[in-house]
Amino acid sequence: MNTASTNPVTAVIVVAAGSGQRLGYGMPKAKVPLGGDSILIHALRGVAEAGIARQICVAIPPGDPELQALCESFAQDLKAEHRLTAASGEGVQLPAVTVVDGGTSRAESVRAAMAALLPGTQAVLIHDAARALAPESVFHRVFQALCAGAVAVIPVIPVVDTVKTVEPTTGDGAAVAPELVTGTAPRETLRAVQTPQGFDLATLQRAHEAAAGFDAGQAAAVTDDAMLVELLGVPVHAVRGASQSLKITTPLDLIIAEGLLEGPLGTRWVEG
Ligand code: C5P
Image (cartoon, rainbow, N blue to C red; front, top):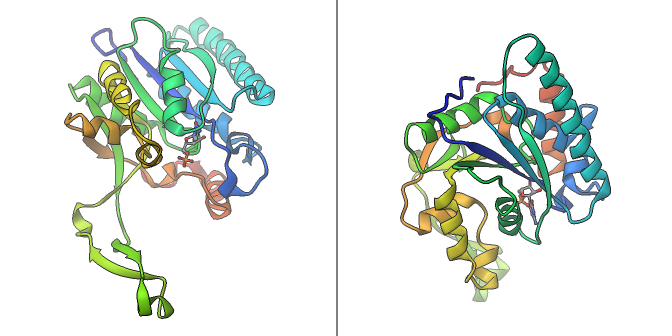
């Protein structure tokens, strides 16, 4: 991809400090094997292949020597590949790889990574390591929207299920069913949100500073960075995501991700 000098100097933050309890592997999700590598290595390769990062900043579980070593070896491999491509005259930029200790929430992990960004960084893409198979094309769509002037960009896909709101059933109704439907959201306006999410760095910093005063309940409700930017009243734009960017969360997701890697064309057989 052409990352000409008029484009913002961009870092990609990969948040990989989650415990992965829902996957039930008894280890941080970033280490879980996928197609002969770890989930984190697949995610980092996707970021590097997209070719838009001057810096890749990875948040890992605090003091995890295995993941630290894995990131260092990834950085060495990148350097070796870069020497080869530089020798062939392709001239792709070599991103710096930085590793930081993540926090107890995703937002804290993002903040720890933002604090380690190189001076001069203008834009940032935040990517969940759990979306290990996000294709290059999605990184490019998000980055291109930033280059075109968007301050916040998220990749989305249409929702196929009908989505309802519910509340716990009270009184006599509790014997009938645990929840009562309170409404149906109009499906044509709904989108499932993925990563990488792209931001002007100053705006994202402002959004996270505003969130510093949240109480525990409000903080727990923050599931992505775009939510915080929305609270500032800044427009958030949406571009097309991809179904292979699924967030590997449950054992079924891992089976699907393995299936994608084993498909006849690797992950590329799905759209995106
Ligand atoms: O748990 P959740 O689905 O929100 O995790 C999304 C991403 O955020 C995962 O890649 C996970 O590793 C990361 N995360 C993190 N630090 C945390 C919790 C989650 O980096 N404390």
